[in-house]
Length: 298
Ligand SMILES: [Fe+2]
Image (cartoon, rainbow, N blue to C red; front, top):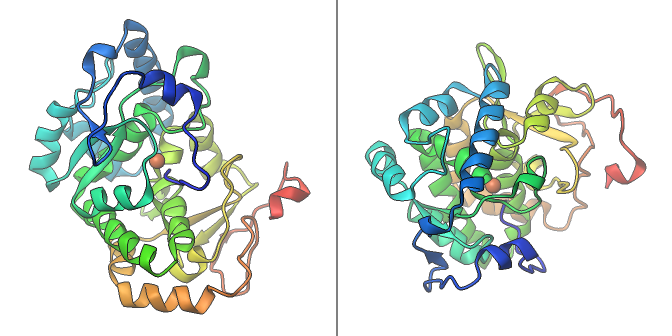
């Protein structure tokens, strides 16, 4: 997640980063000596729990990346070690950051195949829910797919598109693509629908809900539709978009001219609500909206 609107560093971010100095590009060396035994214990617990729930739910490319990279079950990964394997796989590197960083800095990193990863970990009393990204979300959730060559190209293309969108005053639209793909994306596979979004990957409850609940909509990927669709950051998603391949996602994001046309086409239209279905949708599953309140339609 990277939404800098009215950004204020949460207390935990401030506390964890006390005394740590940032470089101009908002990175810092991973402060390995700050990890406590409790941190490694929390990592172990989260890792074990997700590995159990993701069997048969995560896409194969994610599981392959997890196996290929030194992302260990019992300790917070060492970024330098991980970077050797990741660099060899796709030329990507991860860089440590305090937490959320300004949009233009974020895009600049992605466009240069550097993925910013929050270095610190949630505490034992926040194991189930933490609003801001930590190292478990950023690393376990996002990094395995960076070992996949096509997904790796997609994230770089997103960074390039982000830099372009900023100058076109279109960031609020492009941010929806990140949300509905990188964070909460599903993919159709010969074995059934699978998860590839990191926001789902790092959440035990949403891993099950996104695939198995009758409540949310599941709709086929449509770039213009996504760019026009609001999202909710405070509840499970009302709608998940399902891609047919990473190639489709990459091709649609690499085409900057087409993206500009979409921005211009929808800029003055009312955004589509997070839980709405529209006539042009290819609906895979129409949610029964169970458990939704009226405010869920905004
Ligand atoms: Fe994220």
